[in-house]
Image (cartoon, helix red, strand yellow):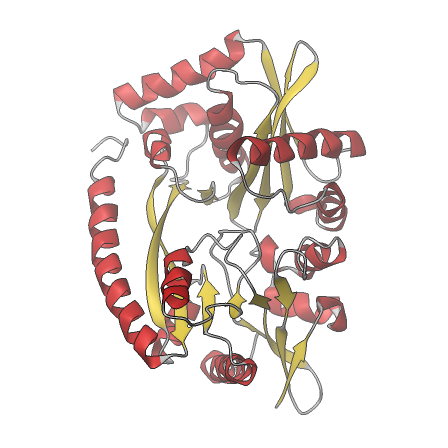
Length: 377
C-alpha cells in the first residue's frame, strides 16, 4: 500500500477519483472539487489548503482517497467550533491550523472515505483513517475533523476513537407521491392550506418560474444567478466565496447535476435558486433575489424542489442547513454527524464532556421537533 498527500486535486487522475466517488453525491465528484481549486474558491485566500489523501495498491491503482484540507479558520464548514477555538485562545494555545475532511461550503452528508468497489471497506478505511491521523500529528495541528459523514463512515471513525457530534437538518422524503397535489393531501389541513396560500401569493404577483439543467442554462443565466448569490451575502454578511466562473465550470462539467430555478416578474428576472442533483437526492444550495416578493423564497427553494423530486423520482430533498420553518412545509428533523480528534488530552476530555451534553440536548431537540410533524397522523 502506498499513501500520498496531494496538494491539489489535479495531481490525481479524474477518472480514478470518480471511480471511488461514484455517481451518488455530486459534491465529492472530481469536477466539483477541481472547480473549487481552479477558480480559487479554496486555497490560501480562504484558508482551505488541499491535502487530499490517496491510497494505491502494489499496482499503483487508486483504491482509496479522502478529500482533506488544512484550515486556518472555521468558515464554510457548518459544524460550528468557534467556541472551541476561543477556549484554546483563552488558554494561550493555538486552535488553528486544523485539518478538515469535507466538501468546502457544503453542509451535505456524503461519503468521506472514498474506497474502490471490491475492496475490503473496513481494511481500507483503517488505512485511510490512520493516514489522516499521521498527517495531523506530523503537521502538529490541534485537531482533525470529518464533517457531514454518512452512517458507514461515522461508525468506522467512532471505532477508531473519534468523538461523534450530532447535528440536525430538515429533510423531505418522497413517499411515492405521483403529484404535488397528492403530497399536499398527506399534510394536515392547516399546513396544506398554508402551502396553497403561499403558492398563490407567488402566482398572484405575476411571477413565472422556470427550471433549467446545466445543458440549458446560458452564460446570461449564470450571471443573473451569481448576482443574486452575491446579494444574499451582502444582506446577511459573510463572503461570497464561489465565483461566477466556478458555477459555469460546474454546470459545463456536471450538467445533469444542475437544477437552476429562475423567477421572472414582468419579463424581468427577480430571483434564482440553485440545487444539485445526486442519484436519488436533491440538494438545495444557494438562493438570492432582487426584491422581496411574498413567499417567493418558499416557492423557489422548497416547493419547486419538491415538485422536481416527485417528477423525477428522487427519494430525498435536503434543502441545506438550519431552518425550523421548514417543518411546516414537510421537511422533518434529521440527524447529521461529524467526527473529531483532538490532539491535546486536556482539551480532548473537555470537548468530550461538551459533546456528551450537547448530544443529549440535540436528541431532545430532534424528538421535540418530530412531534410537530405537519403530516396527518
